[in-house]
Length: 130
Image (cartoon, rainbow, N blue to C red):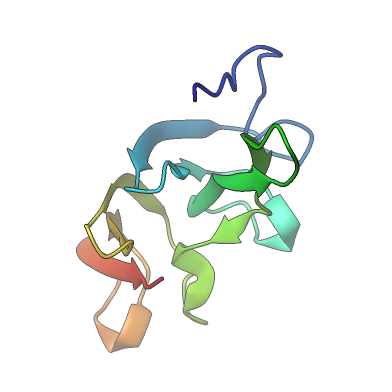
């Protein structure tokens, strides 16, 4: 089956106070789920105006019935870099990959003083396990 998701030209970050959505990256897992990630200085979900890492996904969902097809639907906004309480600095240059177990691996640079590492630029890794 072929799924067309760009037929209506969807936007991942419009209408949510997303001032500057930049540096997008995309990964597709073995089930056909699509994960899009970016950094933004918009005040998404009251996150403040520092640059944060955000992710949205298109999940392949089975549509039951005689003519079973796959449809895609949006996920909610998922905050990646604000998962730590002290992340008030800029998070940017994000990359994403998936593995054969369905895990999502995310890496980015961050100027926040997360886990008492200082406000210099550090590299962070985050895994979302399925």
